Length: 171
Image (cartoon, rainbow, N blue to C red):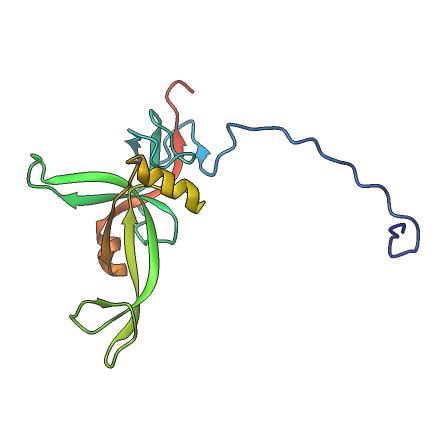
């Protein structure tokens, strides 16, 4: 059967596009200069590969503190072992709807008096999407941690800013 256009003429043959591997194709923009209102943070491991790679610098927008599903952020924690009292880490924010009574703990299921709310977790790695790869990572000891749960307001207080780009030394 011949494909036809809306005018009834035979449709042109579709050309196959040759796949070309592009190792530098990234979800985050490589920024040659630091925009105003931004800072850099060193990437010390490959926990967020392929978005961020060891030896690069995450470019952080200091004005964006609102958690967003699946986005990378720089988060701040209290740490009395450090002279300044704060430690910083890269994280991926993940939110889920849970239930909470005023002043009470998070609940998985709705109960009387509990209101639905977004429960945020700060993941310190991006686990593999394939369950077999995830199981292999767990068996090999490549396990990430997460912090939370946080309310939206509490997460916004802890987030230093959203990762909006990458600075690569020598570029």
